[in-house]
Image 1 (cartoon, one colour):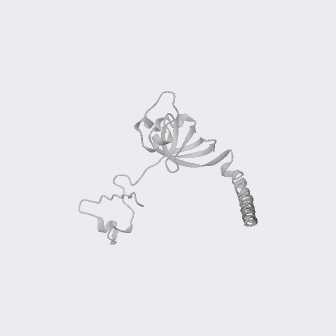
Image 2 (cartoon, helix red, strand yellow; image 1 turned 45 degrees about the horizontal axis):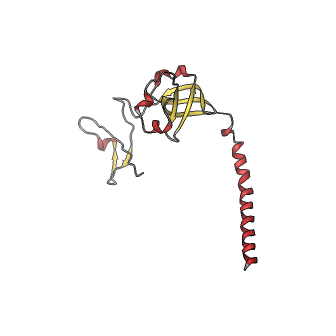
Image 3 (spheres, one colour; image 1 turned 45 degrees about the vertical axis):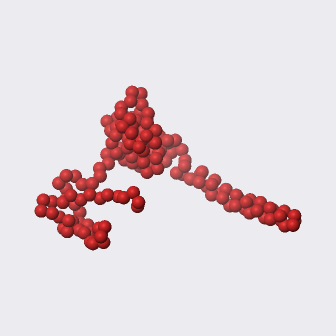
Length: 164
């Protein structure tokens, strides 16, 4: 019985070595990926918050995150992956505390060197005509802008449930 256990242990050890040497090149390649290099150009969207706030507070939408704190800089909080980025130069963001923005530039070790910043808007402007659409409602019926139009206009609200 002892030789069988030793043989089984040797097989497991060999399989672990094979798995390690199979995964190691993938991990090393990921470290050499340009997206992990010192600077990465791109765009990031989120909310401008005070750097005195952490990601958990920003996620909870703490009112403290949108207060002007002396000595604190503004950071971009990306709620998609719960990351806070430093922003430079600060002069172009100081008037936007609490706003949702898209920042374009270069990411360098957690700080975005900004080339541009744009305010994000959600939905249509007041009075703007909605585009034609067709969608199934909660009862399975097809609804369009025309089927929803009332005598005084239309208010359309989309609610994303928590169980999606």
